[in-house]
Image 1 (tube, rainbow, N blue to C red):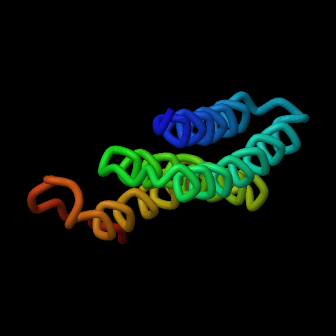
Image 2 (tube, rainbow, N blue to C red; image 1 turned 180 degrees about the horizontal axis):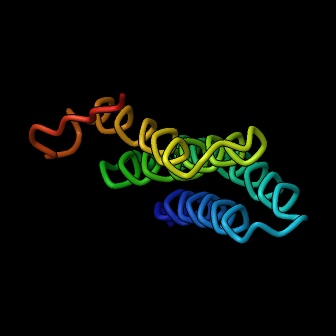
Length: 122
């Protein structure tokens, strides 16, 4: 019963992956589809925290899974959507998409055993 919040978080992660995959296809409806998935991810992000507090389920796995889902759903899809609208090149897109990952590694360094990882963006 206490794993329900983790299942909701996995739905958030799946929505983020679906948003990114929609943007990669390059279809004319891709931004609308991606925004729909990002909106659903935001709702699921709210719900997983609400359900976790309601059920008093606060495990370490849930915290790390939530961080990963937020990274993919918001740190990966939003910059890609912005890069699509600005019309920048592939190398600049990689730099934009690389930055949220570095920021998330730095913010979760206490929770994950990642060792010394340097993110050089420049």
